[in-house]
Image 1 (spheres, one colour):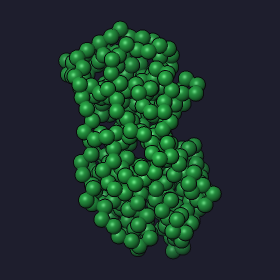
Image 2 (cartoon, helix red, strand yellow; image 1 turned 30 degrees about the vertical axis):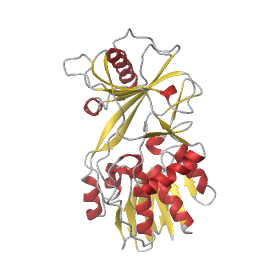
Image 3 (tube, rainbow, N blue to C red; image 1 turned 90 degrees about the horizontal axis):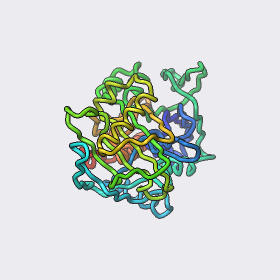
Image 4 (tube, rainbow, N blue to C red; image 1 turned 45 degrees about the vertical axis):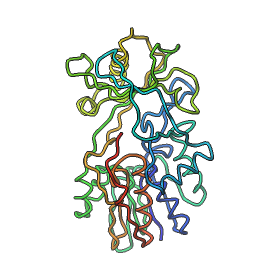
Length: 348
């Protein structure tokens, strides 16, 4: 069997590794230059890297716990315990705490996915910078066509992509198309801002919930100082995540304007005079958060050898993406596992 995995995020890479270890021929196709999905890091201000996607993750399931422990032992993951506050009024920071132990990749959030990719490199074919626009079932298997018109044939197809992309690619399969279409995903703006000197803010991270009467209401939902995370340099780099409704309302805005407004909102939330950043980089994730994620582990049609996986299939978040990749590989290999039990509401 030759399986195509569209998407090189955590879910797709996890699936690829399991299949490769079972002696399945695998090709991973991804539209981005490097693997990682929403765990990718972006360069900013020269040699600095900003985690504009996933900011941290927690562990509940023992299968994911074993993987995270391995990454920790090899210095690719560490726990993060920042000084956390909640801001409901500008300048009023109330002490907060995470409900679960948080982890981050080291030296960037991309470290775990890069490790997965390296672990199968040479045995799995990677085709980066290749966007698949259509899949078509024929008597000889599956034909995948990319945006340049090039086509390739495979025996099985895994869509490790956000639900809207999966739904579009599954247009010829009404039963799977309907399931993927039932999971809308909201966009999210994220901004990295680099400053020359340390900003006089007395906390490392904040949940921002300023009221509707405030000038910058809804712009920010989260802010954190990157140097508070293990393995990061001491540069003054702040990561800012916008509120979901604000991101949806401003998804078509110019990134430079979005970055400017989010930096303004950061200083407004902390109630300190603004400082001009050295560099600002804003990025829109068009499909960031599943609104009503499934608890099925993955979608799969055994007769046609096609399926989909990702955080949206498994309760959302990083652990859900990993478990969904395991579930997808198990189904392709003809195995069945109980992936429903750990699929519970997961805080962000």
